Image (cartoon, rainbow, N blue to C red; front, top):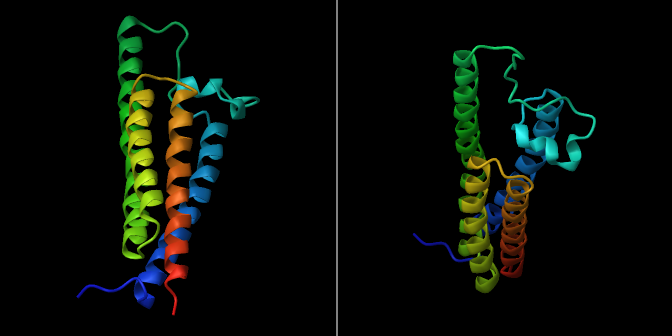
Length: 168
């Protein structure tokens, strides 16, 4: 069974997908500030404007001033492992919502040009975000993240407009 865009189920799906993504976005922004306060962000995040007045960012890993080469190597390995754990976690936080939001726009027959553009920008932003995160690049990582969020919000708006436009 294929539901038309005028179906209440398709319209509610499009709106709920958008609302849930915005709720998730607000929640992750709160969590991000709390992570800053705890010193658990990536070390290069100290370059961001919101890092002023915050503790040193070390992923929460204790740094020893006079540690042995073995301890230093272990600490570097732990930081690299945590970096990739964060990359995967960030993808798992963002991509399922993107697929839901963009799918809602397709089902609601929203403006195709807007939806295609938003999906392409989101995909490129996620690829750039992973590269920047893996190579400790700030503010590049933040800019790629913001581009992905903005393209997803465009998808949310386009989906909701598509759902509302098809109301009987």
